[in-house]
Image (cartoon, rainbow, N blue to C red; front, side, top):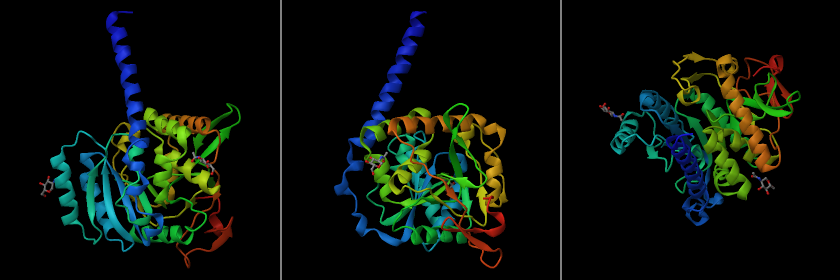
Length: 345
Ligand SMILES: *[C@@H]1O[C@H](CO)[C@@H](O)[C@H](O)[C@H]1NC(C)=O
Ligand SMILES: *[C@@H]1O[C@H](CO)[C@@H](O)[C@H](O)[C@H]1NC(C)=O
């Protein structure tokens, strides 16, 4: 091995160590976890929620404009905040963006853009002193949901939010123990689910604190796995909520969802797939191009199970729908589902 190679490996190892140590510091030692800076949970209002949108790509600003406008127009939204994760975007652009989103919005809820303190994916779950609501919506910048479905999802969250405090969302996946390889895998089941995606995930605000600040050394390790994998912060949040509730999440059926694709998951930008029913989203999730992505997600489940020492993920069945009059609804497992579609979501 040449000296050049040795030096290169040394730098690579040293910098990844530095990155992990740095991100652990960011999430444990510093002020984000200082409870005296955060409003007390009792002071938070429950009639509205705060939208936290992950923003990263400047090329998606036109989409972001539409998406923030829809949320800002919802009477249930207290504030829309874009958490900008791309450290290379100039400060001037973010100031302009914040201004542009605000003046172009047809809605009343304020829209702002703030830069994330690091490029760590864990930063999307940092507790924030300015959140004044009991619920937050964690979502991506490329998912457009029709206003009625947004409202319906929040009503479901509110109606179930006292105890237990389940995650509520529109996109579901599953974990499963693969018996032949004896490992956890990430998959899609036709009739059950245990993981909600952060394309649209409503949850109680306190889960931000629990994700970022609680769970001691094992959660610190789990968060560093998110940094190493550059993925899976959403799966880890599902672990946190399931560990708390001993229940699976709640899937809500949206009337219309526009999914513009996620460039970071795919490595390339997919074209917008246009408007379609939310149910079709499952078929896209199963496409063979996504096999590598699914394997990495399975590795995350395996690693979280290892460092947390348990598997809290639990299955839920059926989905909540807002279409009384159009289709019969059946009670199943404590939830209302389409009577004729109990195995489809
Ligand atoms: C803000 O809007 C102005 C005027 O339409 C436009 O020239 C500029 O590129 C926009 N900037 C961003 C960051 O959206
Ligand atoms: C899971 O719950 C237990 C008991 O409620 C708690 O002690 C532990 O810290 C939680 N683990 C995580 C990862 O949140």
